[in-house]
Image (cartoon, rainbow, N blue to C red; front, side):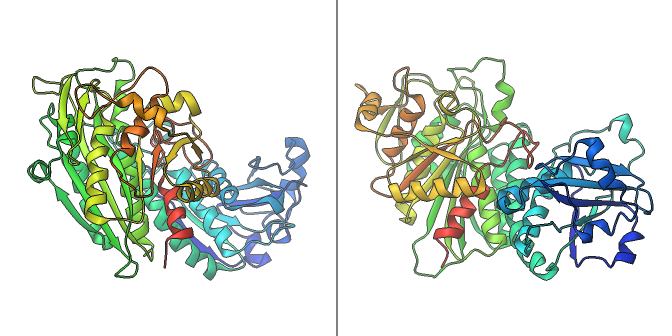
Length: 503
């Protein structure tokens, strides 16, 4: 993978020091195109500002203009980044500005960012968010490439960019960044997991990655097939029976809250590869099914984030890990399995397998931990992409307060959710004449029917289901993500915990 930039914070350089600096410097300009005095100190010849009209640069948000070897300065390069309207810069805007800087780094290894802007009061948290955006955009997954492009032949692939962010409050920025970086590390872990090929990351290997969270103080238990069979998890194990790679369930606990407080719980679907089973998917696009564990990746990344920033909450993360493969032992359409809840399920489509995994994971979580609420994440249905496209995840819930808090966290982080309906009319569609229920309904409302299925395994516990099929993998790239696996859900759920459930 590309080397990760190192981030440091410092006070603004004195004018004489700024004028003699070498390397690359980034400055910010508001939408009037003006630079602050701190920014002008790096450009004594005013080369950059003279270039603004020629480049038609007005300071529009995320606009970029650069000067190579500017007159009167010893710099290699001076770059202005448009910040738009200074008064409108929120948390996500700072992340995007950081991403814009990262996209403009090129091969620079010695970089300064002058975080000063006419008309804006910039604090340590803003600086931390800008740095977080740089890290998010800098991520790439190229660990399996053995050769680089010819253009990169002279570059040192092992030398990361050293970025110093100059701000009025470097101590406050450093403190805020320690917290933000913990969350970013969780996002990048989730991206890594989704991007890994299925021959490298199966259920056993995924469980081992979850086990590594013990170094952060997370308690991790791994249930193997023997333990799950004893618990009666026939629904989950039925999905796994066609693969020689055994199923696993990782149970992660972070106990950062008061000892007697009931935990909150997050559950993830972890189908490390999904052929569709005997109801096989078409060959075109099947390679993307290595990402059918995006929900489990998000839960694992979240647990990393919470532990790394020492969140003051008791949190349970559970991921059901299986491979849905095809051989002579694979589950057949028409099979009937018994879930841990005792409810029987007629499996009419083996490609509707994620809900079968989550059914046992939800029941196990509720039965063992009796949490305040449960939120599950899953790349569950193509139907949610038909309904919402690739920019919103579907939100289904039996509890209005939980749904509203999730939606608000989605708006704050721009990992956005759209609430979808549940209802008795939909629930009737999964009634079966041969078992307690079937795992598919009719032609229409596929995402809703999947949610109705899951609701039968949560009792009266407040619960939400996030269908992230369109947002966890293959979603549109943006200023802070150029990766196929986005890590969607980590920042969203960290914000939910931070805003409402820490003591």
